[in-house]
Amino acid sequence: MSKRVFITGIGIVCAIGKNVEETFQSLLAGKTGIGEITLFNTMHKGIIPMAEVKMTTEELLEEVGKAGKKNLTRTALLGMKAAKEALGSAGISNIHQYKTGLISASTVGGMDRSEDFYASFLSDPARGRLIDVVNHDCGDSTERIASHLGISDLVTTISTACSSSVNALMFGSNLIKTGQLDRVVVGGTDAVTRFTLNGFNTLMILDKTGCHPFDENRAGLTLGEGAAFLVLESEEVVMKDGKNILAEVSGYGNANDAYHQTASSPDGTGAFMAMSKAIAMSKLQPNDIDYINVHGTGTQNNDLSEGIAIERIFGEHVPPYSSTKGFTGHTLGAAGAVEAVISVLALKHQVVFSNLGFSIPMKELHNRPVTTNHNASIRHVLSNSFGFGGNNSAVVLSRYVTGDA
Image (cartoon, rainbow, N blue to C red; front, side, top):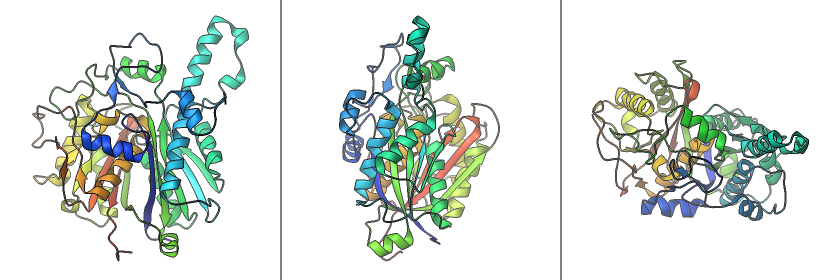
């Protein structure tokens, strides 16, 4: 059994980049992906901003070699593109060389096709076709991605709200550690839809000026879309094949404070437990963490709860931290994987990324996020993802130094 799990490949498509390199360059340039809604018609167009992937569904079909196909959701297409890049990044040409799995996360699934079907069905029930809604469930996108990659040893879907893809990473790591798989492609994918937009707007937690994580005047989150995947491989495979190691999954933790259906506990109990477990599993001390990619949605509740939890753990020595949702928006089920990829980039390039949209410190906290990119010595990154229902997850990713393994 593998005692260690290494990241050997990453792939991403989001509002600031169609691949890893574009995303990294946008992060360096401080370029936000938040803007006006263009992908569908809605009464909120021009009023509520979103962070859209700058590709139409037709362009995505062309990109993944599925031009003309009518039964693929935008969620599946985003996932196919990012997962394929991750395999290429890991230098994997023979998917069957080792026992390989896919664990993909999603919250929206095929809602983009379902809501179009619903509108046409209401106008004329005779036009309703089962093929238009068969892609609705979250597992459909996972199966499509698995087929696209040729993965069949183990394929499963995780949907735990906005912590989904970190839980996918955790589950994949456990499968490797217990010897059930040699490598796993883990991550998540979600597309923006009217359903998501209207749902979060009903909750009154969307900021019409774009999100401002950890700012005193924050007014809510900004929805985004995208997909990100990471290739996890066992220590044995990595050493045997001499693989290039991007990072190590050194610790992770999951906790549920069961406080409320949507709200985080005021004292940050769930976040505190998840982060504490991740740090403990990695056999590190809090002062070993060099950077925190916080969940940082920009809502009143999340940022205060997470900020309090961070201060409970780190005391007066809070490491540099930032929310990168000011770049990508909140990509829901994909968020944890999107931010894990960004954390890998932070480790690889030794840079702390800025927290866009911040200007006034929160009066309840004694620290503030990083507001400019800067080079730093980064060995360990803590990345947080918290979801509705008290689903709290955190992962510690560590820089690999030759000779460590």
